[in-house]
Image (cartoon, rainbow, N blue to C red; front, top):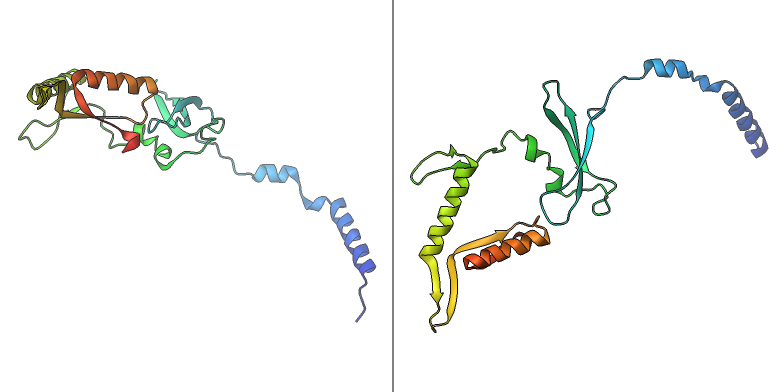
Length: 196
């Protein structure tokens, strides 16, 4: 059996590599292009809109892709994290990653529902009716639980029958406004979603 030296191995390897390179590896670009699978992206040609995730106060940036349908309505195709954002750099938490479900879930409720006392089902009502109902309930609860003075005769002007929980997506200004409004109604039980 002949002995293969290092020099012989390198000569053979270089000669083989040169022959392979000279033959072009048998790769024909025209054939590769003709056999390439033709497909288009779902978001190809879509309009790109930038937004902020609604779930908490971190402020992660979102990119929403929309397309105008033939019937004139806009269709939401995809929502993902914005890679250009210094806040989240394109990443989203599990809640933020499901942001698209806010718009396209078949279980999404699009109008206020009200269930009267003793009823077994929910009924749709208008936003004006719902806001009126909320205002009436706040007024009746406040009137029923309002405390003007404490046990020592000190003026306290508070209501202990209503509590308020602020949303974690509140800006500082919204949180300040909500707190002032609730304190104006006499609430003492104020909470914040981010603390809970």
